[in-house]
Image (cartoon, rainbow, N blue to C red; front, side):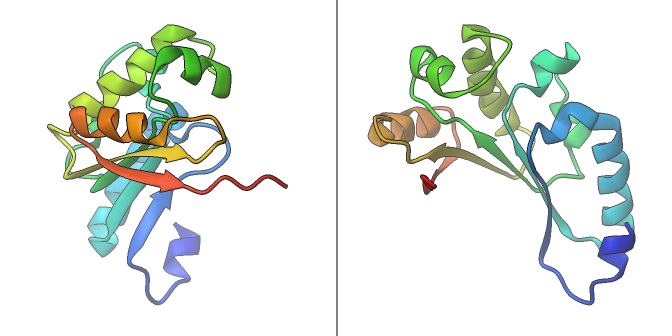
Length: 146
């Protein structure tokens, strides 16, 4: 909150970083609530889409009215590719959970984006078709091989 208070102007506040933003769901909800109260700003959460598995329940209703956009790292058009690319302790259930999260979020969050990193060998067109079938806007993130 101090970092936000120090800024004069911002268009959106984003919860993201290494790891999953929604692991600390209670903290995200608390901070988002305070940000909305103080500033009425737009809030986006970048997520791997597995928070419902992590918490053992549908957490999306807890974000309603607080989060304007959720950007979910879809990253693959199918479970086999997802498991190959993403470090998930949930195996193929992880990919299903991501798809379910996107599908559910589109009914409750104003904007849902499914993103894919443009990794060599990933069928971007198949990812786009899947994202759109789940009801999300599609976004390709660039792959930086450094």
